[in-house]
Amino acid sequence: MSFFGRPPIDEAPETSQVLIQTLYEAPQTCHCCRNWSVDPGASLEEENKALVARMRKNYSEGRTMSLDSVVIQNASLKQTVREVFEGYKGMKPSMKKFVFKAPFHPFYFRWARFTEILERQQRSPQPAPATYSQLLHDLLLEELQKDMTEVELLLANKSITYRRLWAIFQPGERAVSTKDGVHEFFVINYCEYKESHMEIHAKYVDWDGTSFGYANKTLRVDRFAGTRHIAELEVFPASFHPLKKELELQAIARGKKFQTLGLGHQHKAYDGLVKYTVGRRKVTKSMKGRIVLDKVAYMRETRKDTELVALTAGAIMPDIDVGDYEHIRPEPLSAQTMINALEGDIQFDKVASKIKARRSLNRKSQDLTDDQLMLCSATVHGFFLELNRWAKFEVESVKDIEWDDEVFSTLLLPEGYKTLMLSFVHGQEGNMPQTKELEQSRGLGLNILLAGRPGTGKSFTVEAVAEHTRRPLYRLSAAELGQDAKAVEERLQMVLELSEKWDAILLLEDCDGFLQDRAIVGVALRLFDFFKGLMFLTSNHPEAIDSAMQSRINLRLNYPDLNASFRENIWKQLIWSLGQANTLSNDDFAKLRALEMNGRQIKNVAKFAVLFATREREAFCMQHIELVLEATRNGLSS
Image (cartoon, rainbow, N blue to C red):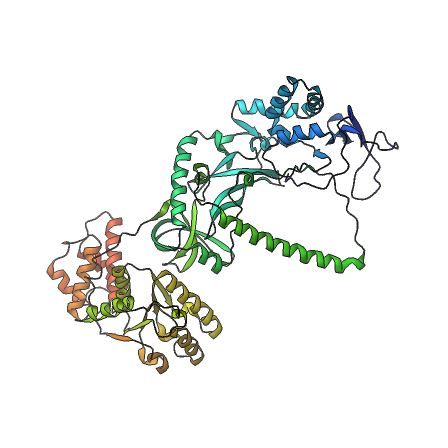
């Protein structure tokens, strides 16, 4: 049901005879077109008729013929029709004739407007326009009357059948769809029936990293039997929603937030549904963590472009098809070269149109109206830092970060480590040269190696530094980079570029896992030399790191194994952070400090012990820790 304009034939003069010429389907003269005649075998003379009604063979519903299409050739009637369909695209004044094809749904949606124009013409001293309009009005009323009567009865009960479902989706009107508890508004463009469902083609407002514009969205309503309440459909006109006003206000507020979140790249907190892909599989999970919103980087890394059209009033309306049936001539085999050239021109035109559209968007004002804010996307795009994946996020679940200003002060490290580390970090922040040669500068980054056995606090140190400096933490493991030098180079270059762009702290965990291979080391050295950010590397086996790589380390901190005093302090801090302060005695902590455990093991035991007590609805105590220890390492006695 999409509408596209096509080239015309000669226009009938204004003095054309005031009558409807009825033509009938005759035997075909080619394989692609219908042939029309006054009667089978008669010659076709329709050029001087104001209005031509084409009848085709139809043996359904006890009939032999039905109205196939209406050809409008009279100048004043064409002007009337253009007024009826004001806002639609495709009806050019230069066209010699307009051809409307059954089932004439566009006239159904604009019938009240057509009737109003006809009544105005009937009051005019010029009788000709009203005469032509009345002919068309009467002809189409006979075709549409049954639809109008049935739909009117259904809408009186706010219900609809699948057969008449098209009648509620008027182009240019707003529709509402609810998914995962989120209500979204769209502007209806057109709808069409498929084998098992109806597709509603609509538009909404999105952001492509530089501009706002209209994007396309295809919604669907599955086939159903009998009648259904309109407000129970998967998508339906917003006018039928019982909470329409309330939802509109919510959508406008969300649109304002969407508009703000689109500016640049932003480090945010998130707690809601995360949508991403793993291979070809789409995943939706409820997750909590830190994100970086960056539409430009999202489109580049996922190769998913957002094609937008300018925010003009006409952009939300469809093209209306008023062209005649096309005659398709078979191409001779010798014309293949011409076809290939034509396809090349088409591809060039598509690219040129896309560039032109982008330039047009960039010239438009980005002050959104309430109607446009209401249509803004309910999701934003970016990078989930904990998941290391590009994803879509719900606008309403994006929050400002509540920074933990205590985490760095509670970090347990050997004396002098924190002061030394912060002096390096803050020194690197303040000494970045501001010159146009910055892009070619080498050695401007800061690489800090944290070496020690697992569970001694290396990764937690970097987390605390990121929290203290209020910067994103982009963490990556050697396993994620792989062992292929080319793949490592591509992934590492992307990671370093994003870390610089976002002013993120880069944490490369277990770096000894890939900084042994000479080919990979060569790649890493070249990329690290031009990295201008802050990178922490952690290693359980620092002696395995290539010597050339070790020469690029600005600061190395060795993490000793935890002694009893450190272990006791870790237990106390974790129990306190889990909301269970003053629940254990000094004797309990004395037993716990004697256990040979690293920081990661202590964290896991404490977390699961508190979780177990909560689920059992019991007051947390030492017994819960003993139960977890018994299940994992045979209890305290070991």
